[in-house]
Image (cartoon, rainbow, N blue to C red; front, side, top):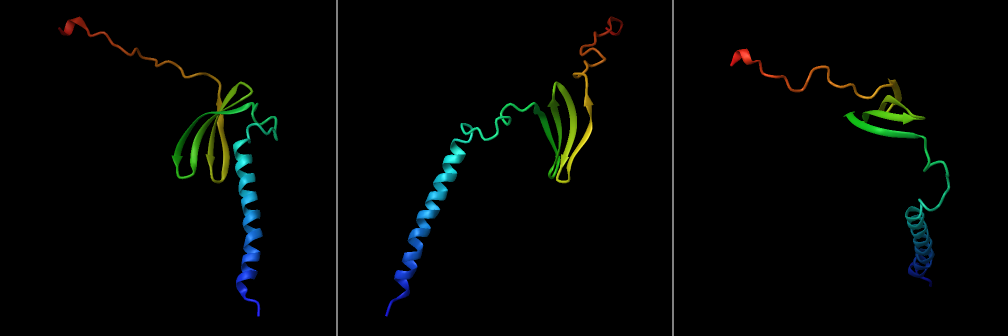
Length: 106
């Protein structure tokens, strides 16, 4: 009378070979992903995230650059919300950083 042990071993052997093959394939894909050019435009993207500031759980504020223009975008689990365009770089402070001490006080 045949036992269950040879049947179980006969099933687990090929299953182990298939699992090993898939794990090796996933490892090689992950390792050589940058060399495999599946999407040629992915590395030359014209949209860049310049800065990101986390605000709360799963929400953040992003500065995104697209075609030379910068935009302020809010990102949350519900999607992206455009806030506005950032046309100018940060303006200098309107007041001088050092204020001379008046001599009349001395």
